[in-house]
Image 1 (cartoon, rainbow, N blue to C red):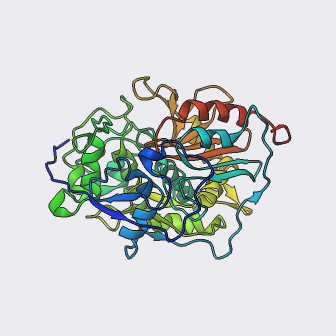
Image 2 (cartoon, rainbow, N blue to C red):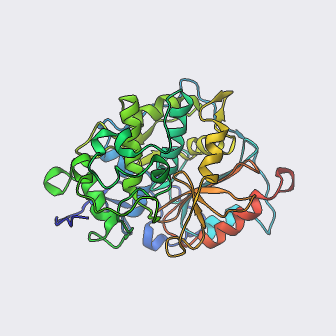
Length: 408
């Protein structure tokens, strides 16, 4: 990848609530992340969200301030139909509230059999907070492709990306098949590194989101410079693969992925609130398929329920059950060096194992989790401020997904 040299001076914006209701307990690591809506947030690219700026970036305040008048917004359904709530009185041994007491989790939701059985917030967030998906956006992009196919668009998964997206011809990704691209084997020599402004994550963030004089690039031209790796040979958790899928959806529909998703998925779910999905700064006609999606937790719950329900919502088939199953069954092996907890990778989705009772997930940086189990019709969503909760959350999830709703 071409190295980028740019300077970055964060702009700190601070909002203060006139009246705050303080929690009755000290929230985990509140001395690091802040504990309410008076916490500062950070603006600028690369969007480095170090404490104490992370809370304001992840809870949607930075989005609302910086993108208020930008064309990134996704309108909700004409008629809201949120999931029915069926709160469970969890026992002493398995109580999701304990995860929030112990770990810096902003919001958490649990669903089973089409019911929302748990929803809780801290750090001043609420049901109206627009949480940053981080890389959970990838699984939304993968599902959106299934929605496009469900509408009757014929797409050969074994066709080359250069044939499907002519502007990718000549790039490293052009010779990869669509299936290989979905499986993160898209022919680009890439290693995910998140270690500040010199890491691959930050460099690509600047390419997508920085102003032109700060390193922002036209993605089609930039992709022509990517170093090649034989497609289908090496797994790499590569946002370039995901963004090329966004290019494909735009090629087939003539609209940004964001707008297609709004019409084909979001407005059919019965969502109550608008969402947002960012575009690359130099390609407003595109949407970043690898990240940049924001929504409220109740509406994320509708999206998770859609996926564990086989792609249907409100009596409408949005993506076929076959596509949803392919997302976690048409997989490739994941080296332990890439992820110690997930052995397989499907269509823009992490897959726990190759066992019959496996489940799949969207994983976001700093601990965002979108756990999905169609077999038990269960989901768990966590928006966190760091990774510390993962071991405890995984253990709780295994119990929750395997326990019938009347036994919780």
